[in-house]
Image 1 (cartoon, rainbow, N blue to C red):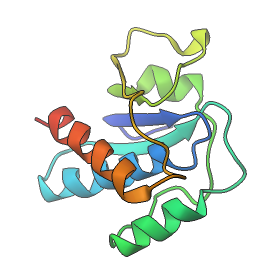
Image 2 (tube, rainbow, N blue to C red; image 1 turned 30 degrees about the vertical axis):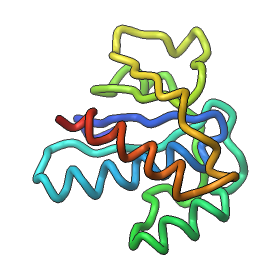
Image 3 (spheres, rainbow, N blue to C red; image 1 turned 90 degrees about the vertical axis):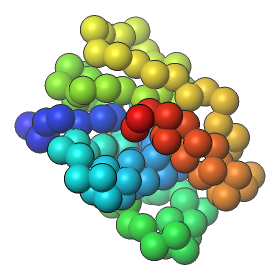
Length: 128
């Protein structure tokens, strides 16, 4: 069972955007002494976190919570305080939990720094 409250970041492969978002959310939440944490999930997870994501986060001084991409579960959706999705969620995940869509983030595979900065810009708004 998940600790509450939790924010779930979801991308298709669970290997890049959601990993970056969760790592930064947890860093910022800790700095602000907020009683909330984030997890990263995928709708169709890859077998490993993208190497560009790992290198980028390490360069930024962060480590992802997840060792490998994990599939989003209905239990996580139902117990989440909020869901932030970088992709379209399958219908079974459409619940009464607020879902914020960040579908305009550029691919991490093209440029980690640009994707990270776009995620952080939205994250600042989310945490206000």
